[in-house]
Image (cartoon, rainbow, N blue to C red; front, side):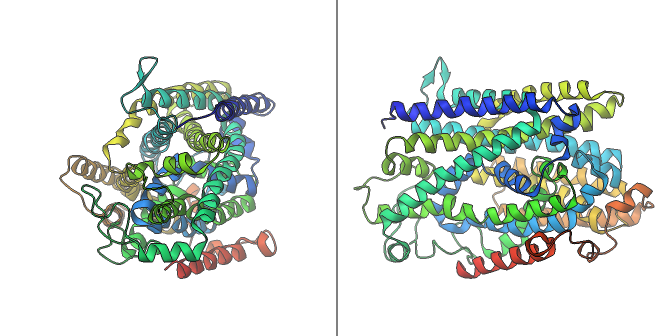
Length: 559
């Protein structure tokens, strides 16, 4: 493929501009209190910024590549990971965010210490740092590097300056993101995320609109999928032996080739989703930086509305690509492997200039996820580990430790990112890792928020034993010994962790600490009785109902 000088200019200008914006944010930050501004943007974030920043921190190149890849093979089914997020964001808004804001904790491990004990805080801090480096940063760098190599038509194994091309792109993206994140802190992250999200959506919309026009509209898409065989059907090693008549369905029955029947999503996703959207520092840090409780409640609900978009702009292009191939639009050509679906569409459907824009959008997706996770990692290490050992550390020293942590985390992510090459698809590897990490954390937070009798010792036992079980499942999976449905695995681990939590709390009871009384609800109705802080769409209760009805309607339409 020929990538023109115009495309390269767009890419380079983007990189220079985004790093410059991050550095400028670093100088602006120095005008305020050093520690709070670096890690929490001075608690000044309002709901539009919170919602957009949460959405941006979630979106990465994985969405552009792996969701299109999964859609090319299985249809819209993996869009459930986008729309199910709407329900967990309602939980964050109604039940979790108010408790976090009550104590103004800078990190979620800090919340666990106040609710349970210091051991829980230390354990969660370590697990959160590991998950941020591997799951958030590593997968984003690996996917972006894979795409860039394909965009520039560099064959596997080729080298750039004596370094494998894939690793070269990983290093470049990691270093550039680390620079502006280290200098600018959270303010740099949310500013660059806002710009990058707009660019990302613009690029994704271009692909979807062009493909939609070329296929001839929705009716042609439906008719083509219902009457033509899949491009990979019957090919050795493709794993695809069926037609595409159900490709636009989000709810599948047992035995579906995707491995995601409806009950596995219903039972398994909440385990992953509550951890990711309500208990993971990388995402929730934007809520912790909210100006007040109203902003903290409305921000996640705004993000929930934004989560409607990825199904149409990240997942649907993969389905459109299948239909275009079925109609012979590409004259007999097709992606060599499903992972190349998005790259294939860029190469064959976009004119000069737009190729550079889409490539820049992919860089945006990777860099914004990395920057969000790097800042969260710096916050966790500085507040929950370093200051834990040296309580007298001042703000200036804490910021310096955060910058050093950013550098170290960047290096570790670069080294560990190739782990995702082990799995059949990147999104499969990502969700499998989450399914092994999330259950004990989800359990401890749920019981901590809703059950006053949950004890600190029981929580610590649950975190440790759940992590051990998850690591064992990871090893079994890695070595091919276990290959069960990862969503159901997450649910089963949650059941086991919940049993441990309840049994240990009754066996090792502890009185509720005085400082913890404000961090647990008396009953589930309590958070719904508080002041609404607004009218109409400014009322979080009304907006929550609207979000709920919207997603139920979407599922009814795409059932």
